[in-house]
Amino acid sequence: MQANKFQSLLKPHLAGLEEYTPIQPFEVLSQRLGIPASEIIKLDANENPYGPHPAVAEALAEYAYYHIYPDPQQTELRQALAQHLVSEQRQDESTGSVPFEQILPSHGTDEILDYLCRLFLGPGDAIINTPPTFGMYSFDAKLVGAEVLEVWRTDDYHIDVEGVFDLFNSGALKRESVSPKLLFLTSPNNPSGNWLPDEDLLSLLQLPLIVVLDEAYVEFSVETSRSPWVLEHDNLVIIRTFSKSAGIAGLRLGYGIFPAWMMPILWKFKQPYNVNVAATVAGLASLRFADEMNSIVEKIRAERERLFNALQQVPYLSPYPSGANFVLCRVEGFRSAGNGDAAALKLALEQQGILVRYYQKPGLDNCIRISVGRPEQTDRLLVELHRLA
Ligand SMILES: *Cc1c(COP(=O)(O)O)cnc(C)c1O
Image (cartoon, rainbow, N blue to C red):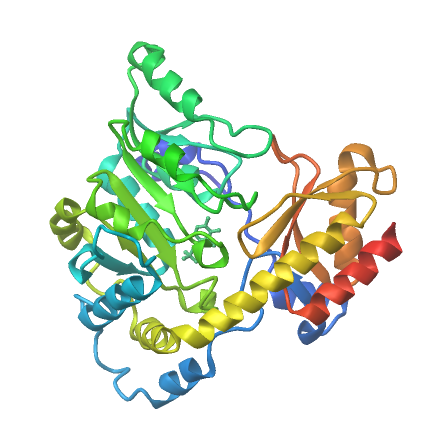
């Protein structure tokens, strides 16, 4: 496109923003490969292969007030979420449970990440990111002109807690006059699937920072959510989503669990109608059938174990243990493609209509991430992986 005189009006930090590479839509891919969409095995975005509970479609069909604006305070949904948090809490948890006043639903958790960055960050500020991890934290921070300070994870993807403290104590921050405000943590981490231990989280909460703990995959873990911790830590925010365990990624519904002091500013800040009525209706129906959805989550967990064990038998793959609904694998010795192993494998699978995510970046070179599908999808994947060996 030709440059024009208005382009200089754009904020300068946005001009240098890295381009975001969107994934190829399912339908486009299906056309390109000449494979019907219904036959494509989509294991590349950690979606729930079973979709939502049937009650969700029923509730959406029956709802009669789509012409009315949503409740900006989302009271019914917040109350249902508060009850849900009680139901999943460990019996021995002594802290009490999160009141609905400290829960804020959102248009996917992406929206909460955006709010946090805009509330706390401007030029000269920074986030502490712990790569390899979810890409949205650094993306949202850069959008508001903040810097991204990286403390790399260890070889087995654990947080380098000392490294985070060193960053603080080294004096480098003062020298470069950058002030970190937010620390992003993910448990289980995407794409590695490992859990952040309590003691690491407790240490990191000692820092003078807002700690954002992303629990997008917590339902798939044998561990429990740290949501009650917000009652005891004024610098902890937890984010959760309906995209993965509840199977409604397409409807965009997430929520944040915040310390009480943050709520007034969030209410002033948020878009009044940030959560649409369809997402609300679907979310409420999912929560009514939480037990049934839990059985699906258990099925996915069992399938993850089967997938993990089977992947260990594939000569060119080394899977990492995962507490989420995906398994990260190192690819080595696939068709002697060397550095291109993961890319070559991804392409070979794609030709067969099987989609996985591949990485070629620091900490993740030659890695693929496979989402847990239905058993018959795992079977097809495994046949293909062995055929390709
Ligand atoms: C999928 C995912 C989310 C969910 O994002 P939504 O906007 O709620 O769909 C959040 N965090 C991580 C780490 C994820 O992988």
